Amino acid sequence: MSWQNCTLGDVVKLQRGHDLPERLRVDGPIPIVSSSGITGRHNVAKAEPPGVVTGRYGTIGEVFFLEEPYWPLNTALYVVDFKGNNPRFAAYLLRNTLKNYQSEKAAVPGVDRNVLHLLKVRAPDRQLQERIVSVLSAYDDLIENNRRRIALLEEVGRMLYREWFVRFRFPGHEHVKIIDGLPEGWERRPFGQIAVLNYGKALKEENRLEGTFPVYGSSGVVGSHQVALVEGPTIVIGRKGNVGSIYWAPTNFWPIDTVYFISKGQADFWLYLALPSAGFQNTDAGVPGLNREFAYSRELICPTPRLRQLFNEAVEPMFVQRTTLENYNSKLAQARDLLLPRLMNGEITV
Image (cartoon, rainbow, N blue to C red):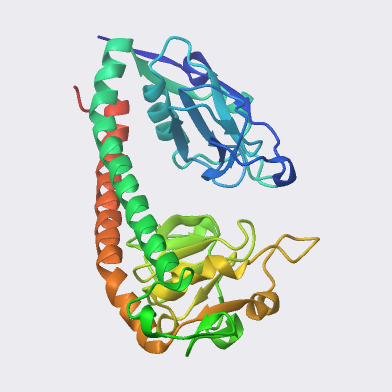
């Protein structure tokens, strides 16, 4: 089994993704993949599996592997020819190659596929590729399994929320009168009377020191830092970019300036699950964003304080388990990322 010095273009051929404005998207089963991963769904695929996608603009260095038909967006590059190599190995090689990659075009942050094709890499024969994949994919398969469990816990929480606060089948509902369409004691209140939206603070990628605290952007966790700005658990809301996105932040973290955050004392599980019904949306025509005054004007249906407390107690075990799984995934990813460069340079033999 041997390693060969070659270029990235000898291993894979990359192509720019395809434009798909939101107004042209039709909800369906096909994942839309951008530089930050799956960011939507469509009813038509542009590429067949196996798929390997990486960022062209925006999030640089992340690599996503897909086993279903997909649509790669124009902010991404995707592999159109694996040239006889193991597709998952190609994904790991690309991730290892792009780690800490710096574009020569400082004025226009991004990557040029033609430049990437010329990057010097080392690649083993197909048999060794498959052995390397068997080691690294064991970590990724565990991570994906945990992600599915996290998604299931999230859905169970949302189902319980809908049962109590949309269908009004909460404990003791049989004995509560409905007045003006709401259970007695409930009220409609503008979001601005429930919580304050605080602005995140800029933290450029080059200024981040990799650490234990997650950094949140409008697409979720976008990195880590050695310092936290906000105490968790609390809620993060997309302000620019992925407008109106909502995330539960279980630990202390740093919110960058593309998001709002709610202070810990005002956030709970009920509010996190209620916020999607607020209808947050882009309100700035020139620069897509969520206007704070508009967000404050959106109404939420608020139950009695006692029922809100009961709900928080009911779903807390789900959120605790979710946080445990997220922490486990973080450790798995760290272990995989420590192994990755050592396997890719032949330092560890398999």
